[in-house]
Image (tube, rainbow, N blue to C red; front, side):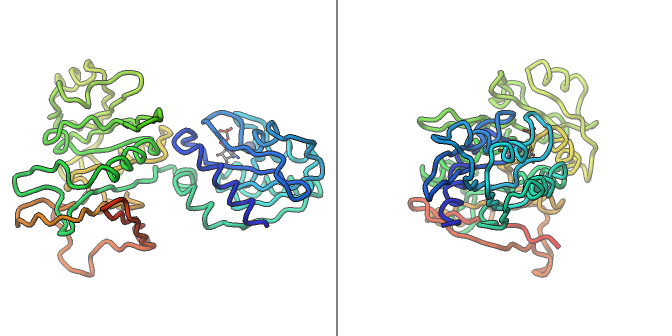
Length: 365
Ligand code: AOF
Ligand code: ZN
């Protein structure tokens, strides 16, 4: 029974996807006499926590009930008062928790408040699933850096474009819709200047039947080459862009980028490029918990080399393009030896209509 209610709490938590960043996805279920009497989840950043929403939705008195919650209840006065204290006050008898809160402000203190009040606490139920659900939150709260996902789409023979450079479309519609869901889930989307020059992308979230969230668009533009009429520079309150430049960019051009409505981040130069680690640190400090890398192949290689990538999502289309010069997802100089390859782990496969989607994590020593 413990896992059934926890699965429900996890499903509720997921409903907040894209709206709670940089805070976690959390779900809570209150059970009394073997039935659910209250449910809640964290809906929006800065809003009430899952536990409080579950109390608000309870259909009867929660005294003596059991609460299932996907993350350790908080112990701190943040935007809201501590949930652990609310749980004690409400007379909850038992709390079942999927995972401890990695937030140093909480980390075990929430559980301690519950135990000190004589509440029975069980932890670790569906912990693996809870950790996966909050992989972004865990990385950001423990390292201060954003969780970085490298997304690529290629043919079965590993090409991201034909020999002519044509790249629309490699994958089918279902995969492309999924990419918009990924954009909705990430707080920033990052591309290299080469992608802007080649494709003039919008990089916005376009989802059917749902108001998606647009990630802030980041362009790495060492020399300030971005054309002022680029789609990505069409900014408003919902569509924001930051162009990361270096001292190698012309100062007049920098002013016109700003005048076009974009933010400019002056980053140090590393190997004749924008220092990617600097940009990631800046993003992390500025509450960006996640970054979706959408190309191109030069940026992908630099990102892997700089060790900023956490997860890979690759769409594989049932097509073969061939062509020695046709581009592949990861460019740069590449590894000289097999033993220098970037290693992946926990690889999973999903079928999306006719395409295949592969998810894997970068193995970190
Ligand atoms: C949430 N939602 O349902 C739970 C959270 O910024 P605050 O004051 O809302 O506090 C955020 C911290 O509270 C978060 O980092 C996590 O440690 C804890 N629990 N947060 O946003 C929730 N249960
Ligand atoms: Zn809380």
